[in-house]
Image (cartoon, rainbow, N blue to C red; front, side, top):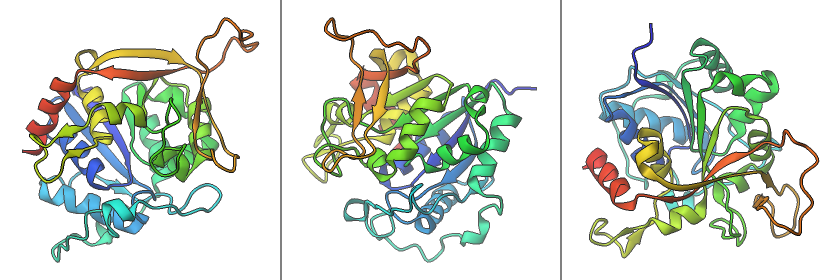
Length: 294
């Protein structure tokens, strides 16, 4: 029997923003985090796994299963954000009492994603905070995976050409462009996308984040939308998106098919569309984040 709570499967590369997003979910009484899967991204995957376990121990939630996933992108590249998140992804703040990696489950994350989607078919919400490698691999094993998810909420991409890892690409998409392309095209559940430009519009000022002039939020925005979509989203648009997988200067950038009178209508009437989030309730978002992390 369903508990009535939102059931979340969180795929993360647990850096600082991921940790805050996960805390938002853990602190919401209407949410059940059924599993967390780890991926390369902000740091190397073994650090990500340790960070998730550290966070769950701190929150008293080591009962949530953690599954280790992809250590590199689909084509074997390894891009990290250690210049921002620190070499361990958590600002290089040591924790001698951190749980050992053996606390993670033995089942691979990709297989766990497929199994969980089947177990909670129609109920499970996928929270995609990392490079999309795990999800793309799961889709290659089970092409019908998307039909089993209730929805997917994803951090990644850009719709105005602004990048944060290169001049033209957002970090998650650039870290595995092929995987991002697979997910945008083939994950058939409703997909809500938070892009880098939205993050830039919703920075926290020094009055809230006292250690700097401002703090750019990312994964926290995704989680706020998951927790209260109707109240948080102020503007969205249903669009088709592609990911540039070649390009000397644009690899990993996202291309949005904005409607245009000069453009010939797409021949494929079944063209995959996603919910591109363009504007949110900033005050409500700030309140939700501070409440969860205070």
